[in-house]
Length: 156
Image (cartoon, rainbow, N blue to C red):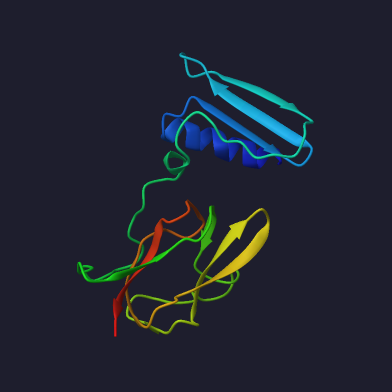
């Protein structure tokens, strides 16, 4: 975990009023604590491999979902394409490439709709449903939680 990642976690803590964050992985452990005056205490040291996040529910770490693009109003019978993991949501395979799907695009179960980066690994996410994209639920390059809706799809 580099300084940029630590700053991103601190920003998420500020935005979501989280007072403690702790992460352990392989031989690394970091614990962030916000004091009552908004100050931060940071500890980092080597430890046994485990993962622990404490302080607030993990779902509180994500930014609120917003509608990306001009999407028609999603109907109640639309299906959600949900995130299978925690990570960073990307709509395209690279910054220079076009988005995998746009609102109005037809998808089938094998259509790749986005990438979620988790632990520096790019994971292609497939639609797993046949239908038409009616809404993009997140902005590009935003954090996403397990089970959070990524897209709304009107089934065909």
